[in-house]
Length: 298
Image (tube, rainbow, N blue to C red; front, top):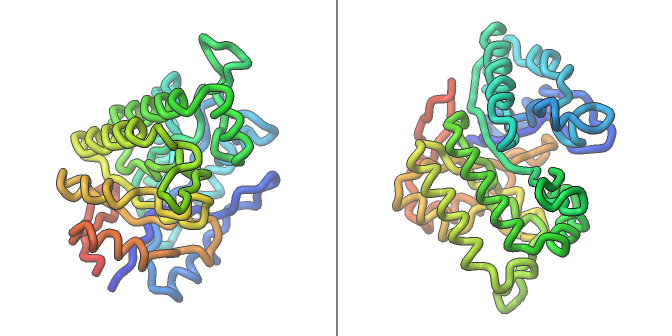
């Protein structure tokens, strides 16, 4: 059985990030017989290049793109980006993607896919209630809890839904990453109740299923991201109900560990496989040269 891990990063998040290093990830992937596709956080639009490195403390600094790509010369590893969506900077996001693709093609690299995600939202009502400052809400639970208190969970769900729909409608991305990331810090008690979404579950599910529907209509794949298992949420970032919905609507599904360390490549694949099987999914999707290829994961 071939395992395709379609979302792997080349370094962990830290205040002083190390240089991207492909070699240890290749070594682990080869040992485990996993086909990896790299999706590094791409550079941000200039307006959002904050912090001393211009990376908002999680993305690739602009000057890192060239040395990052040079590592892939003479390798067969598919390389892509995970790009954040910004409603007021869509043209610049397209430019960033276009520059990446041009640089990769110039080096004759193998291209994987472009993944779209939402880590930043306009939630800081302390700055301007009519035009709130954009913030990284998923860096720490204290941050998420702060914005829940400041804005209310309904406002956060609305903004997240709006951003994901904008991402899909751009028709730039091949995959929408970790659609359930909003639950990163959530916890489910023994009665099945959510710590953060209790009383708002229906509203949240309707928002997420609307995103899935629009992704399918635009030919964009949806990612089951197992990183959620290692978070307080304790479950993959895609529910069994969402997987079943994707199967019924013929929406493409990809598997991803979202690894930031070599040892976490392909993690929790067995759990993901059981979820796919239970939902009746027979084929998963991997991307090569931004084109979908289908494989039997069982």
